[in-house]
Image (cartoon, rainbow, N blue to C red; front, top):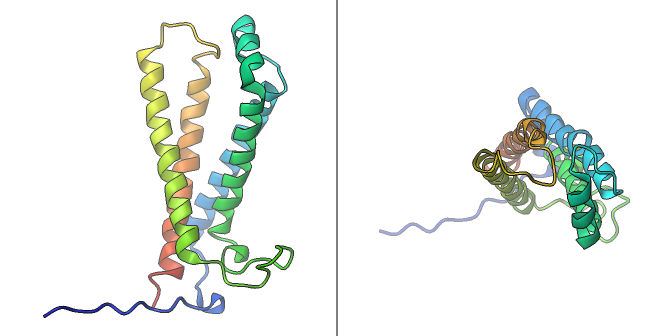
Length: 178
């Protein structure tokens, strides 16, 4: 006998329980890692300053499009910080009134949760890839100091794991509730 699954309606924003302390800490740690941890150093590089980099290699890389690339990365990091906070803030449930066309409407929880899980997965995969690549190429000179990885790997772990924890909480509170 086959069973037909009937989709459950999404709970109203007022019916969504608040996030746990763990989810709050994870979301804020992820957002801080994305913004305070990532953006300042990458902005310095985006503005053309070869801080902790081989100056001649950096200038060549920068002239080939490194600056705009880094500005795009900074913008993406800012969006990832907003994404992390949306997992635990009211505007992750209902669009704020200043958002054109959708103000006051319910945020689609499946879309938001899926986006957060996808970004967290890419961040964690990138972290593993960067760690392995750095270990394999440790003795090869690159543009940036290899010691940047000592700073970057923990930062990306906090960013990705924090977003994952916050997304699980969000999904549990908004989709699997009831």
